[in-house]
Each structure stands twice: as structure tokens, then as C-alpha cells.
View (cartoon, rainbow, N blue to C red):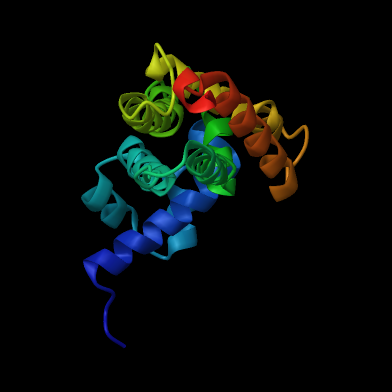
Length: 201
């Protein structure tokens, strides 16, 4: 049997780290548990990641990469906003992303970098991308918006409603229909309120 390659060993360790960290949190997870689950060795973990903190950061980076949104397409605002809103919520509501938010809430004193990293990859990144598209619609005379950054932030806040918060806190598990209702309502409200007077004539 061929020995596992370094990349395979790294992947196995990260898979085990996902299970342990997202289930038990950072503080209650031990390297020994990850080693036992991955079938590797402590020396391999330290060679690859340097420390428990280094392994956790690598896991966070991989999940955050999954949360990255695609570029915002051009097109009619109502269509683009609906597509973007659904994509945004799908990433926020991903089970691993939700588990990571729970870890951030429960252990912010121990992993202070986690909350800002999640906010940067989620809400902040999405707001910046959408604000850029809104500026394009303003330049084209389609929308009349004074502050695209604030408008993008408020649109995403309406899209989220209480769905993400309730999921993070285990209060409920919103489905695709719940997300669709929020996205449709937010898009209709936004377009009606921001449409340029020129397009209403």
C-alpha cells in the first residue's frame, strides 16, 4: 500500500479537525482527538500546521473560502438582487458556516480573530461587492441612491431578517422557502425605493 502523500495527510487532518472543532469548539478540542480521528500522528500535525491554533486557522480559512460569493453580474436590478440575495443566504446558512459562527459566539475570548474574519468574508465582502454593482446602476440612471455602501448593507440586512440569527442560535432551521420570501421582499422593497425618477416616467 502506497504511503499517503503530504497533501492527502493534510486533507485527512483537516477533515478530522472539521469534525472536532465544529462539534466541540476550539478550547475543548485536543490534538490527540484529531490525531486519533485522522489516523495520523502528533508530529505530522505540528509539521503541517505548527500548533493547535495553526490547525484551527487553516480550518477557518478553508471554510471562509467556501463562503466567498461569485462576482455580482450585471443586469436588471430585480433579477440581480434576487440571485445575489439567494447566493448570499446559501453561504451564510451552510452548516459548516453556521457551526463556525457558533464557535465564534461561544469562544470569542479565546479566538478573537474568528469573529472579524467571518464578518470580513460574509457580510462585509458581500456588501462591498453589491455596493459596486449599485454604483453601476446609479451611473446608468437606473437607480437613484445617495450612499451605495449603506444601501447594500441595508439590503443584505433585510435579506437576512432573523433567519441567520435564529439558525445560529438553534431557534429554528429556515428552509429555501423562508429564504425566498425574504429575498423577494427585500428585492421588491429595494427596487421600489431606489428606482430613479427617470425610469418612472
